[in-house]
Image 1 (cartoon, rainbow, N blue to C red):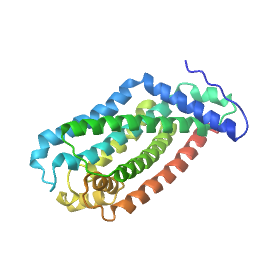
Image 2: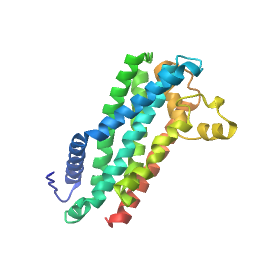
Image 3: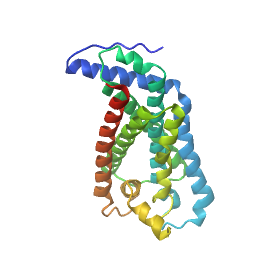
Image 4: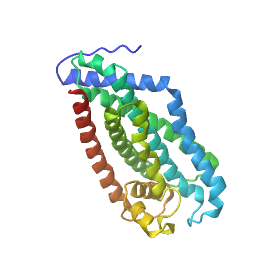
Length: 262
């Protein structure tokens, strides 16, 4: 059982409350290794499938593994963030919220704990996926600055998705329904330039792929890591990520307060 010590009043104590919830969520992640393992195995399996089975038949103009790895990273990030919805939903239904109602703590601390734990979990799983990709033949040529920009963009995207997942988890009727609500986070990368160029798609699907947040983020990541042209994708990706973060944060806060009255 996790022991929670909460102090009331003041900014310093608010920070302490958030830190406590972050530590709790990270400890829960360490106990639920199956979630972390799946967050690593699923992208690895998809990357191996596309590289070794479909890669020889797909012409992207570059070595296919260099093309597909950025999309695989986004797939990994999506799965890791979606797991946040299930963690929050579990807290909503296992009595944790009732315990917090008896304590002088803001609900913001609970959601923040889950979101920060999601970032830590995603950082670990993404590192493993990139290491495996390099072992499979991925050869990034980005500079240190390019890597730092990539990490910053991905961290912003993970933060946005994690807050969105936290909001979905807060209103889900069960852990299972939270998983269903967050399914689009796993599905959206398939409707992007993650695995094939968008110009090869039918016109109606191409319109969807080129006007959703995943594609510019993937194109920017691909350009930073492998040197392909980025064009307008860089600032479009940043606008999407910042906009999604603002929307997700407000939505998660409102949904949590509506559900708990806090």
